[in-house]
Image (cartoon, rainbow, N blue to C red; front, side, top):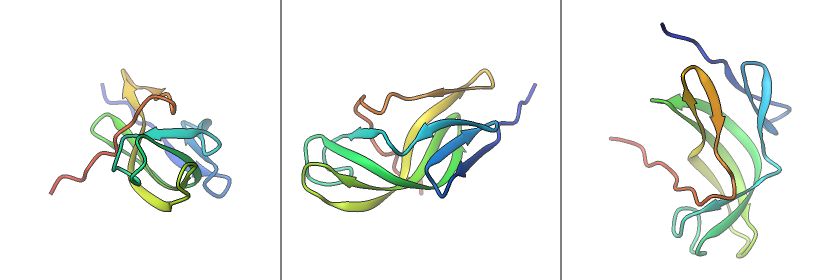
Length: 106
């Protein structure tokens, strides 16, 4: 049985909505592994806005803009994993756990 999941950004990119429920907020600080966003090890990135959200296999990935709290670099992130779909349900990732940005497959 295939279940559809509705994903979208809300409130000018402040939230990711899953099935019409606010699930992931830009107010969190995401811990990113070294070299993924900037040269800080690790980088503590405060997200400013979600630009897009989609499912890649079972992983929910977002395109976002953020700023490193340590060095001040402000940049976009094209594939930030924010959660996953398990048995048709969304499970969010902990922003404080070290994340790696998924590289696009060519």
